Length: 74
Image (tube, rainbow, N blue to C red; front, side, top):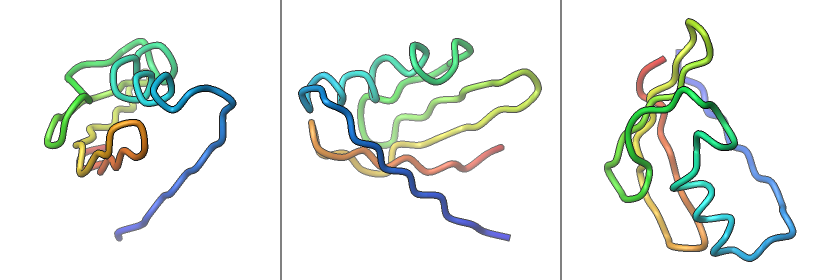
């Protein structure tokens, strides 16, 4: 069964600061247990929450504007 999840949030910070946090500092805001890279298209990373994990691939990226991740393993 395939499902889609979209999430948008608004923050009161410069777009360059937010983009850097999303692509370079995942372990700081999502999970300390982080492996891989999320800085360019086709990069892959994994986050773990105990026995639960998510593996993501960067599908597309528009600097300081948009990042699309696809979860391909969970």
